[in-house]
Picture 1: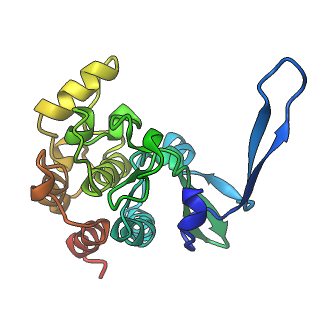
Picture 2 (picture 1 turned 180 degrees about the horizontal axis):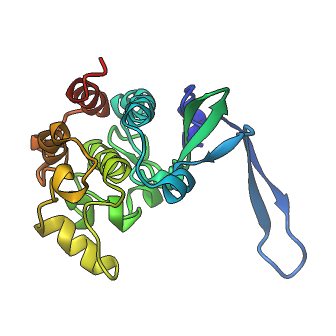
Picture 3 (picture 1 turned 90 degrees about the horizontal axis):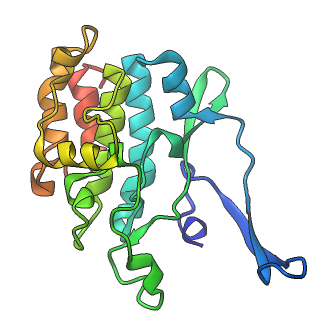
Length: 229
């Protein structure tokens, strides 16, 4: 339902959802979702195959993510599970067009969920590698800056080849997110330009107030740092 309310060229289009009766002896109904057909692959597959991404591609992908998320944030929606698996890349000739997937973990910040208590539970939903410190701690006042953090982690992974905080298990990863400082990209990878160091350290600040205010601001800073404006 949330995805249907967030119609946008860079968000997957949900056409309809409904249910059908189940066979006897099982749950009463089975729900299904009909979405637009996408020809391409998830960003996760691209990263797994090619590891480091060309910087121009990074800027284009992040800019399109920002074009999708900033209006959603302005309307009170927080995706809360931003990760490469939820960034689908549609091939349009030689170009790639972003389609964001899975708004099923969305958090509402403007009271849209006042009649649905299930949507306000579980502020730690999401992949641990991309969780912000406030999300890792399960803080109740989570807002759009958690998505800004997650997008910054995706940027870091594309330019360094790995996420900034790693561990053997979920709790260890979350502990590092909360307490450790990320290694600057140029120190983590021989190919990452030093111009990204200050940008990424700002984007991955523990306090939401110290980060970029929007994904668009992050994308703009990224393009400026790389001289691509």
